[in-house]
Image (cartoon, rainbow, N blue to C red; front, side, top):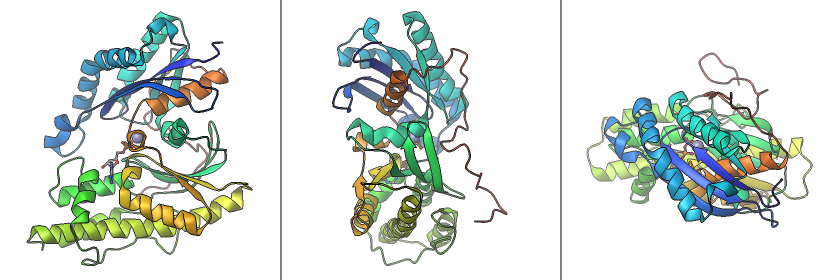
Length: 357
Ligand code: KG4
Ligand code: ZN
């Protein structure tokens, strides 16, 4: 086995075509030789959301070019690649298949191992692209499709402590943004709107705040926002509603994180308390501030990946690939896309009406 393996990682689970090349390093933090992300905002913007067929088509058109760009930037040649890793799920099946098939063909032609990666595991380990963090650590994963508190006990070992019972947080941001007339993807722009508004102007609900442990719920907020937007007349009121939404989310996360800290400490005997916040929504500065505060108050060290590693990227996929490569956990070329992969296979499904929390 190569002493400093080089992994080529590919991510196409949703609307980003991404390729990254990383190399193992004795510091424990890999060298990121290249990290190319091509977003499809312009393609989906006019539809107000992601259109799977258009996303897949764009991946097909771009994957060769992005891979070539990543290789050129890394300064390495294909014969130096030790393994090829690609997201195998969760995500849109026709999008996943593009990256997966490209990766399997490349691995096969180079005669190197292929490694299928759980996209969520990429987000979960993403802070390890920049920091040495000991297991176990508490993770809050907040993205467009997921919102979960997890105890990360090691590679492939996760215990879910709480999850959203309806919308993901990124989804709540995007839907609220849409109601405010902000174009897709609205999350980052909603944060900018919020900066110009009065956060005490509108009172929004905090669903399941006093029950359900550290489970989360955001659907009620969207309904409340919808009701208010019907009576909104000025831009200033829009800014005020955005600010009120942002503040409510911060308060929900503050309270639920406190509960998650307790649950985590009940399950784990740790010398150092680490709290990692990952996924696209972890780029939100207001949320970062509030979670920094609750961490300080509870003697946890809060760790946020760099903004470029919060959203979807292939460096995090290559990182999981590297960890798996080191323990020779390879996958067959018959690996299929798994749109519904989870991190904690034993966790109960908690979405839909009639659930008890
Ligand atoms: O992790 P990610 O890139 O893709 C998924 O795996 O879902 O997350 C994308 C989500 C989108 O919903 C986007 O609106 C949200 O993250 N997002 C934000 C911010 N930046 C991205 N939400 C709130 N504030 C932000 N600054
Ligand atoms: Zn993601």
